[in-house]
Length: 80
Image (tube, rainbow, N blue to C red; front, side, top):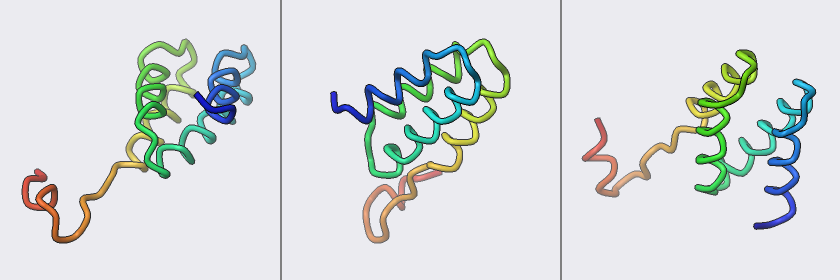
């Protein structure tokens, strides 16, 4: 586990909502780079965070970072 991911996880465990939002931003950047562990962390936040604003932001991050299939690959043809 690298230091950026551990820093994001630390920010997600802080009590302050704005710090947790910053952790979500860090995870979003990692998801866009293709980190699957960050997707799991976002799903955990979506299910278990007590604040609805953080849950909504995690939901938006997951929707915005949906991986689009690459052109010419089988994922494009099998996608629903």
